Length: 411
Image (tube, rainbow, N blue to C red; front, side, top):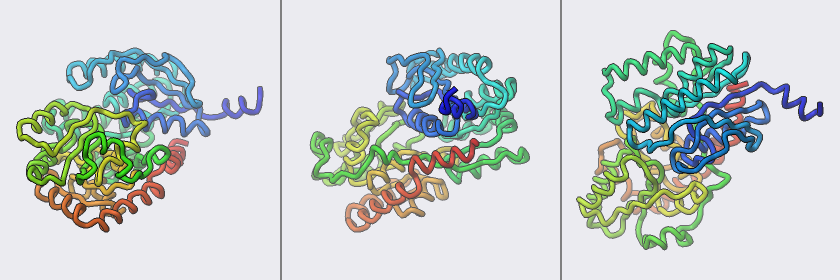
């Protein structure tokens, strides 16, 4: 056996369980792929995932392959449109059953497991298999359930569904070695939810894609030229256009600026609420709003620079449930951030502590308008926010910094 083979065989095995992985480009797929590949120096990393079902839906990836040092197993599951709830639940059920079978066959005593809450049933499956085979599970919470469901109005906080999810989560947390969360507000929430279980909760933020995103002067931006927005003050909202996004406040602000020919709102992405957004624009006659189809992650430098400031928003009730990763990429592009979020949420803390923009409360369209006007009328302040964002992304929110923290947490 060669020295390289000996070194590999002596590494502990880390299983990463996630519904989405490369070639999926949505946030969870990108982040979990980067984590898995970044930890190959310390672990024999193996991934259990499904076939593409989001932006790459319809394509087929190999059932088994080794990519950048990671052994990837893609189990069977339906890949229906996730924006239709019954079909999304069917996707969750089929990939859940396939994943459970694969983990029960593959896990070994002493293996380490990192499981993400996408779909929210995955931690339950990972815990079942880990208990049966003697593995140790760490739960990575990108979105906290049931809180995110209650925030978007999918279920009521006192409903049977919410209580059942809480009960199952409590059981999962009881048998976890650690919980990793995206922000300090989420850490506080999870510490309340795990009170009495003595489970460590650690904050490891997502990061900016600094390897692929850099600032580009707006006069050289091809997308702004294509859309005829070179002479406008452009507010960009890019990414998933889903229920957690406070679209109402943005649309109401756009309506207040309806007669202002200098300010324009640009949405880039796809999601469950795109049709609602298009209907609102048409019904209100908002010629100052453009909705552009999804643009691949590989072109982030293009579309993130197609603005003067970036919009990041969460509906009320989302505090502690998620931290929008699009924030860090706007920072990488050196764009001021206008955040619509609750006080003391991780998003608000980052905006204020790193001095990268302005935060307003969800539902306050006038405050949003005031923030936009302040950035538009104070070029020096915008430049200061932009420079601070790029600097903070490089110093605090880099891939290498995040991987070091994951390695330390999982060893």
